[in-house]
Image 1: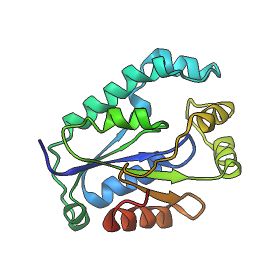
Image 2: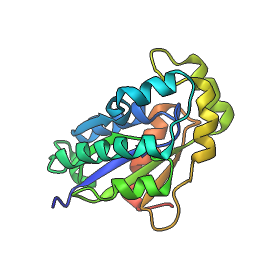
Image 3: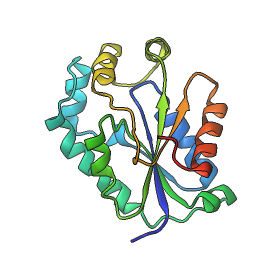
Image 4: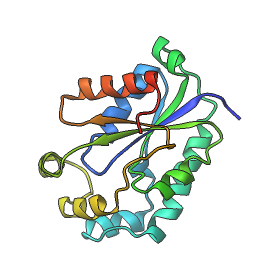
Length: 182
């Protein structure tokens, strides 16, 4: 078992999981995985049609994300920041419910969560202007209804998505340096 950490950048659609996750992975010199790319075609088709995913839809997908995490658990950070934080990989995944995060915690190495929190207004505005993504704006409300923010004992840091991405990244890094905030 690796002692390095995989960081799961989590939140609802439009929160910036891919943007912040890619930036964090680059800053740490490790691989980034986008859980959206791991959805089976049936899940993508369901979302494109405007239907929210159910727990039954999500379980196989979460286990695919977990498999990706395990495949990257032996990653080696190549930057000073990556070595400082001992981050071996970063994955962007909605991880909306605690039970979903519990599945991801089964990884072969420690897992930390970076929750990107935003207001409904900011998230809606982002989704209205997003290009090239399969997730329709109307599904945001289903995700917000399902969302269980990380709580005590979940080893999560929380970052507000209001500021520009470089500031959100700074919040995440500071949180990872300082320990859990949830």
